[in-house]
Length: 298
Image (cartoon, rainbow, N blue to C red; front, side):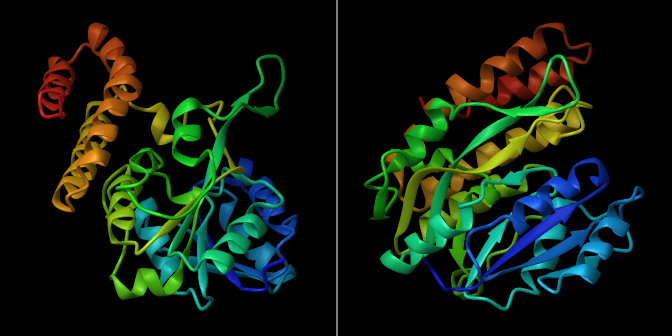
């Protein structure tokens, strides 16, 4: 088992209902050498107290707090400034890590020497007849990016990896972030999409494993940003992030990944957006969507 220390950055805003589950999933990790930076993005609920009590009871946790809400990208960047371990990971405070997540990821990087390792994830959906949540199955686009396992690969050899664009399914070398000055975009939604493509194109090599490492919560209250795509402002940020991600791949000469991303966006992202556009009261929604569709690679 890996002995390389890992720092997990856990940003949260008004996540008191879910934070204990996220923190419990960290405490349950089989990897013995982890610490966590809990970043409270100026929450107005009990998140601040939960984070503070956790850090007071367990020295593996540290807390940073924003005095005003600055967004998920800024919260993750605050955490990055406090990392002092060789490996860096992320966990949103309303999601859950599988118990062997850090072990599987760290063991892989120890063995391969790659810059990044990417794991699979599943949706955590609300139960129809109760207050709980149930994890689903690995979706096809997730499996295409991570199954079968590949070590020391690249976008040229494995362009489908570009479909895994979330921050919290990855473990990376902290030096990789520092050497390339990597930070999340701030002041916008979907901040991890462009950064993920930059990471793939900058990595000397990356690994993928089919193991599910994270359960990604679809909130019952509809509060997740991915559940707000009916808002024109959210849609614009989403489309901008998708387009910028493709631009990063194209600038790096990763044409196979450009084609993979374009095809995945057409089959996965656009259909539900078109369904929203059909009945959306604001014509700006349909106009923005059609303008974006015309920019996609054929």
